[in-house]
Image 1 (cartoon, helix red, strand yellow):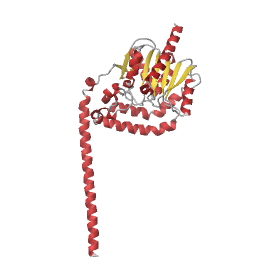
Image 2 (cartoon, rainbow, N blue to C red; image 1 turned 60 degrees about the horizontal axis):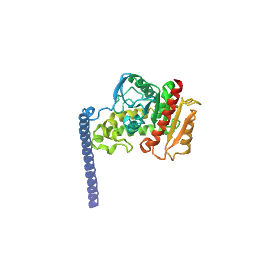
Image 3 (cartoon, one colour; image 1 turned 180 degrees about the horizontal axis):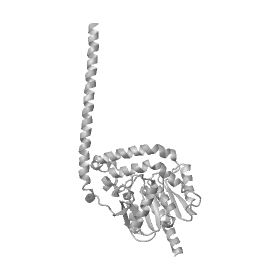
Length: 335
């Protein structure tokens, strides 16, 4: 019995020793993580100071209601095409589209408050606040109305609110796989998940991981310009802005839903672009939106990707060109 008790005691001692070693290893790992995080934070803070020279803004900063927004305009002509990016994206996501469009007219892309080269703006970051910012930005910059608004994903919320509130300033709409404001359950479910995702991405950027890994953490659909300026375009500030917009998804959806009524867009030239392979509900929704205008139509891309402008740019360019031509014809009639 004594030997059995001794064996049991030895076993307990061995287990206790193993547990202590595991606790010490965990503690050392925690200390190492803190030290690495602190080193990464210091590295990123120092590197950020050189970003204005390494990654200069393509456009200019314009003062709007106490903060500055980055606006990049190219080309000449009327109506001006205004490009509105999706959630967690910036003006850089439109680089190729803007180059192509500016050969035939005036094109402006910009960064919503907090993204890329723009200052952070007041909270909450709802779509209506972004639409107000856009209106003030274009006015302050002296960009002549009317505008053809081209929007992707969440940017559709901003463009639709702009068109509803300033119909006289809007010459046409091109909406590319825009967010469905009626899917409230999906928005409610995705909101905390997106907020957590953008918080994690922001932490990776803030501790220098994004900068050190180059393009490894950049979205696959990113343009070459966005990749080249990744520490700014997908940096901690941009991720914080994306988190704020994601958290305001439900009130933003309610704002957009309130604009939907028969004939809301009158005879405004409108193109809805959606990827192929969408469920019938999504196709029906696109047709319903197009029907808000007597000149609305739906274009189905051959790509199944959400970023249609990256995977099938010719379709998007043609859609924008058709809406611009229709808007110009209307402007000629008025003059």
